[in-house]
Length: 334
Ligand code: NAD
Ligand code: DAU
Image (cartoon, helix red, strand yellow):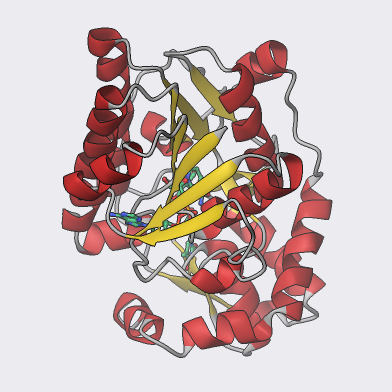
């Protein structure tokens, strides 16, 4: 099997490549990544020289490059490449449209031209919007509230349209919030861990009672692997950890694990249109594909904290670079 993995130098993409190398060493992987601020080849240092793995620096919205790569005879596309941070989409939505919408369309077009066997669009539960009680199923209305989630919704719908119109073998997965190694420290969990280790305030948006469902990144990767092998073409699969926590509950637990004072918590201005709760029904993937998460919340949180403690140079080099300017801009006025 020959895979084109896009965005493989990011958080989930790099964990996925590592998972595939371990589980299917005979599968060949081409990793196409633009290396934006979120892409980091350090995430794949142990893999970069392995036979059967190739890295290409480039943009998924670059039609010529995508055409050239796909003409080499690839079987599967797994599209992780995206602008992924809600707060950044509020500051400037343009790159989100370029990559998440146009980039996905360029990949779909390439997949159509070259007869790709499977196109896996790695999407998010955020396309459904917020839910006060109960769970979203794959049939629920799409109701995105941020420019990020709107751009991901557009990409999901393009996959649907290419399946319906051109019989393109697309499958969409919608996962909840991931935690684990190599997550960029702009996202809540690594932000809390690294700020706390630096004895810096931990910013909590609004009242801190927004709820997210957390899943260990390795469990998400196992789910994607199952979908590639057994997923129904044209299908949609929700993926969740079944670990709903308020942000405050999660942050308090992290500070406890790190032996840091709760006084580091600082309530700041809320995120505009901040979704109150995400929750998905995973009956379909569990019954059809036999997948279920292997990591409990406690095990996932411990493994994540442990990784950041052991990989201080990884996050310190990110936090001292360009990211410092973003952080200043993002949090100075909150
Ligand atoms: P990330 O921001 O850590 O990584 C994104 C990667 O995409 C980076 O390596 C970046 O360089 C690359 N990229 C960005 N624009 C590109 C372009 N135009 N061409 C090629 N590469 C480009 O993101 P992540 O958290 O790993 O998320 C990966 C995917 O999973 C995204 O599509 C996201 O929407 C989805 N997702 C994320 C989560 C989560 O909790 N992080 C949950 C559900 C779904
Ligand atoms: O649900 C899946 C989504 O999860 C993915 O599609 C996105 O790519 C990913 O970024 C994530 O989105 P969230 O907005 O849920 O994640 P984030 O880590 O930015 O925020 C998690 C929660 O914590 C959210 O309610 C906002 C809050 N928050 C976040 C930050 C960065 C804070 O209270 N303080 C912060 O500093």
